Amino acid sequence: MDTVLSIKNLSKHYGRIKAVDNLSLEVKRGSVYGILGPNGSGKTTTLGVILSVINQTSGDFEWFGKPGTQNTRKKIGAILEHPIFYPYLTAVQNLKIVCDIKEVPYSRIEEVLDQVGLVLRKDHKFRTFSLGMKQRLSIASALLCDPDVMILDEPTNGLDPQGIAEIRDLIINIANSGKTIIIASHLLDEVQRVCTHFCVLQQGKLIHDGLVEDVGKGATIVEVKADVEHLEEVLEASKMTSGIKRELDKYTLTMVEGFGAVDVNEYLFKQGITAKHLILKVKTLEKQFLEILAEQGGGQQ
Ligand SMILES: Nc1ncnc2c1ncn2[C@@H]1O[C@H](COP(=O)(O)OP(=O)(O)OP(=O)(O)O)[C@@H](O)[C@H]1O
Ligand SMILES: [Mg+2]
Image (cartoon, helix red, strand yellow):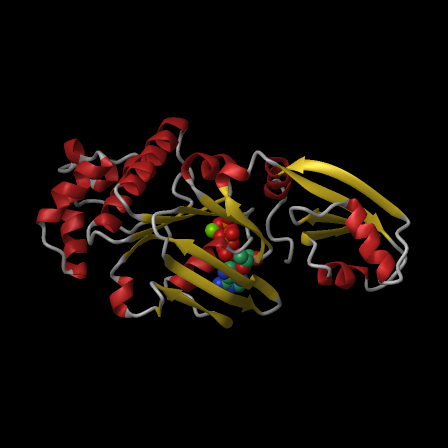
């Protein structure tokens, strides 16, 4: 599978706030990639940077193996914020304006309205649309130039269960038509239903990436305490953990596959450190993510 998007060591700081903190990830062609994280974890900022709407503080990203240019941007359809359509114009009239801006023939309008299931409402004014229809119209608008990649920021926010199910089906249909899709979401359930791959952000940092099908699997968690100042650095240097969380003097380590409590103990011992507390736990990724997502966002403010 070839790489559609590659992000390398990307950071975006707003003063003291690290909205995106040294983020690296890759999105492969044909995948539906979920960026999962609680409020304020940097999802929208990341999407803004890769769409060249926000300037990064440092780091790089490439679309289709090249730095983002006008040409590559044409291959990307995005719905970032709430779409701006004219309330007193119909769906078709609104899309004609988008066609003019994007230099797309009007003949595409019928096709995209059909794709999102709005043909029957095409001559109705935008202001009469439900939230779900508005969202579908913005997806239609992003589909107009037949992009290779679709970027959706919280596509089901504010919708009722029926609307959520419709948008999710629509996303799956678009993915089945061969497009690569990148979705930001704070809902694990949404990512599990729609995505093939995903990453998890927490305070701008990547704390996990992998296949959605692995979410139900267990991860090895090791809790450790030791009376040394630099324990976190030592543990980080071990390369045995994919995540380290600290609560007071207790460190909770998410172990890389193949490593367990014995390895931590041996490693620390070799570093001249004696663990005063060492406990092995197994926790599914699902449980871990639900804990992360239950956090209130904006822990940095
Ligand atoms: N223009 C800005 N100026 C200052 N801080 C900002 C700005 N934009 C975002 N931030 C901060 O950056 C962090 C990440 O925000 P971002 O909107 O990317 O998060 P998010 O994951 O999309 O959250 P949500 O789930 O609420 O949409 C937050 O702490 C936010 O307050
Ligand atoms: Mg957001």
